[in-house]
Image (cartoon, rainbow, N blue to C red; front, side):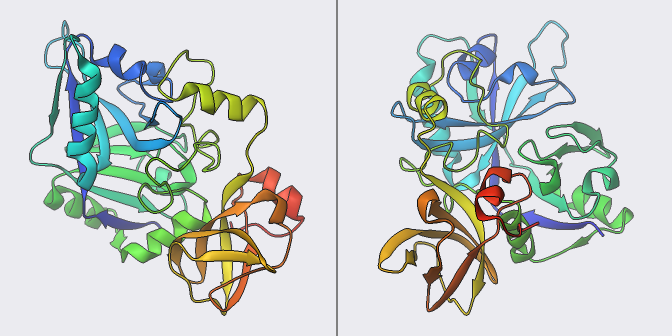
Length: 309
């Protein structure tokens, strides 16, 4: 059965004007050419050194006039929306566009579980979207198995969920689901000015286009990809008798093997060294067992054991 969770602090930033698409396309890691009225894109903005700054979902806001370019809507962590606005305005220079928050911000919900896209009338295609009952409904652009994002007024979302018999659950239920699928979240798994796209697996979650041309931080990202320089990866882990918090060290004997990020017992998402992946791992007084997500086939092959999903 599909379930739903409400995200308490998400925001939308609107970029409008003739230069909006060109500016963002030249900054972010994904190719925005795939954007359409029925297709959203997931992407990130990096530092010039290739480290993570922001990640967000991008969709189109239909224009009332056919002669006007549709605005771009960026869904981002509400606590960092103003920071993203300031950053984009630094890049704006003389470009003809407006950058402003959507006020009031919409409520954002996620429908997840078995056949969530089908339950929302969508194909299981990352980024597929449609409008329904005044809501914007979007298969998560990172991974269809993660679920379906829903934007709109809180009352409208509640009525839509109730009509389809979809119950709202506590956030931890969704966090456990997200960890199982090895999908990182900004702030906990993706650390500002520290995380690298390929260590987080974001190249496999539709966030990086290596053939789109230049973007901020492209040099490090491309070099890491083409030279096979990834030495650590975010991996779901099963905690056995381990009591941990984000930031706890994971040890392989006397050597540090990684770090705990998101936690939803008995699971956590951990940044692990690949050369320690198959060794006995411990943290928080217990044992840590790597359980790669179904799409992390390279890591599952290295372990020769079970996956998380």
